[in-house]
Image 1 (cartoon, helix red, strand yellow):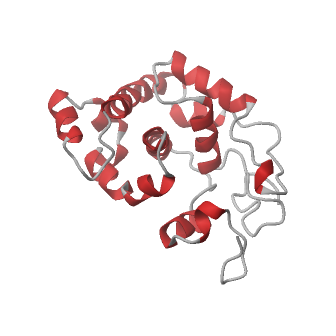
Image 2: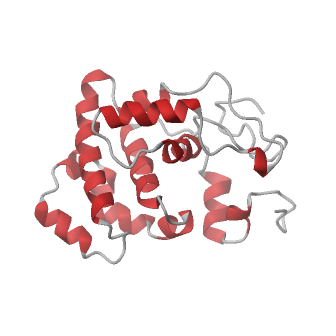
Length: 193
């Protein structure tokens, strides 16, 4: 959709000011630190089956509830923390997703011995990024997202399916699925315009 500013954005980011700001300033920009990747991975897991708008509106609540997505703090969560989270109306209160965030924090700590979460996730950067001309050309999964999903699952991660991992790869700049010719194409600096 073309906004009042004359710029084209995907439908999901065209009308809601929060989504538009997220799309214009954050989505697709490189995130290479452990905490940042852990946060995005956690939020993508919570988003499964829901709209991104729901997650983005609750993002600050998630940050407060999950200790700023500090993997060490989340890995130390107890059953009492789990019960606290299940009662927190400010987040998505899904037991399986909450448990996944906690176990994923523990798995993140274990990855530190072999380079860390960010290094592992970025190691699945493809040789080429998609070059969509229309939104129908934007994939929702790739060979790399399938391989990343498998690699994370073998290391104890949950809610990391191939589609969720492709969304993560888009969100943190590993792939650039902005339309060719759009004002955001190549803005990450990871891929050429």
